[in-house]
Length: 146
Image (cartoon, rainbow, N blue to C red; front, side, top):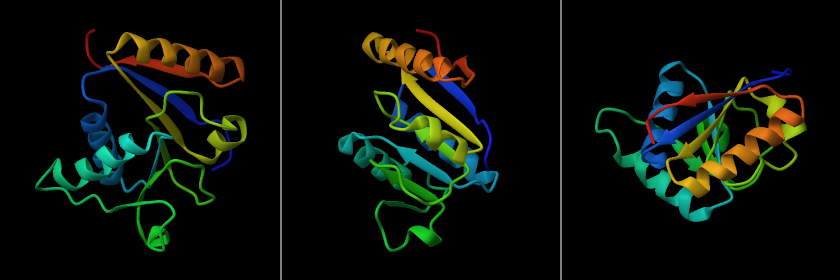
């Protein structure tokens, strides 16, 4: 999957965890594998629970990393950059991803989820500029209205 991935910023998301569940469900319906990255353990814990409970009709098998089940599981939740390969990187982090210049090209697509909170939007603008200045072409998508 070497190359330059699409980096989509999804702005004005009312409920980031619920929105992340919908993104993961859509990726899985397209038979894509997913890595959700956040250095915030509480955020990953909320997402872990939400992936089990947000839809009675969808089974979204996932594991927190490291896990002995990772190789057989399509959705990974991680506070670090794992070595394994995934199709989609879903960012739920406040700062630019570490070593993103070499990490992002391992994915087909990168999605950065941004809430309606003004402080979160300000941090996202910094991430957007950081990625753009490094040669990526981030694209802003207004998901909801502020």
